[in-house]
Length: 328
Ligand code: GDP
Image 1 (spheres, rainbow, N blue to C red):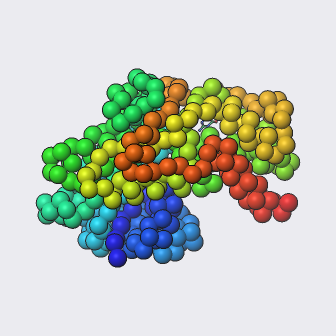
Image 2 (image 1 turned 180 degrees about the horizontal axis):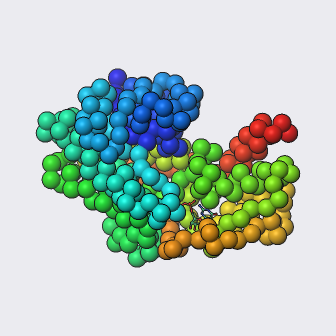
């Protein structure tokens, strides 16, 4: 039975990846910070088959202990401070957790492996946010990186460290440059979930309007459930490598609003949307669109859910959730 250790087990991707690996017959371990973590219940309820092991990405000795307990064949490093807007307010903490901690876990894997680099395969969750002020459209694996947020800068550090451990030590370390990926499990601070929740609440008469920031920003949005499959495929290759995982399509916040509102029968939605500079960013990533050809060709990966399918899935989920919460 193959064994996997996942950091960031409480997040959207940690849950989907756990479901995927459990279904494939893996023994799955999740790294969890402290016994009183409020998200523990979520993991226990959603993926009860996952075994939890205590550790903190910023503490290398705890990572080595976690590796000794889990004895993994594959390590997926999904743990990070992941909300871009928050990363300006907490730039140093973001550098520690999203950036420097990648070196902690790479080094922990190397020490645990006693330089037997065939022992563990490693996945790093890199991000399209590394492209920031995009230097090429669409963005590929070798597009020049130009991060535009402390989060993006920290992800660049982790990305190059992963490549360095591959090149310096021969570690089977792959980096997935994932474009935005969403789902009903996305945190409500991200714009897709913020919109799906608000649209559900507005249609149920629980809320009057929604306040957003930049409506012209564009993203390449895919479904998180599809993207974790690409992570797994990377670690099944003979050679480790870097891959862009994206849909190859880009959509604006306006298009997101249009599909979400129309799904609940509201065509004239403009009066329901307010704007507030509070939700604008000091520097914006304007046009993210990824070229997933390498992942298609080499991994045989394909997305299954398209953009309208994703948005309506999220709105439907929030309608059910809001009805249950509010007895409607
Ligand atoms: P990100 O790509 O990881 O930063 O994902 P987000 O979902 O947080 O943001 C996606 C885009 O939506 C960014 O360009 C934001 O500027 C834009 N946006 C517009 N209004 C909002 C808002 O109210 N909240 C968030 N989170 N993003 C917004």
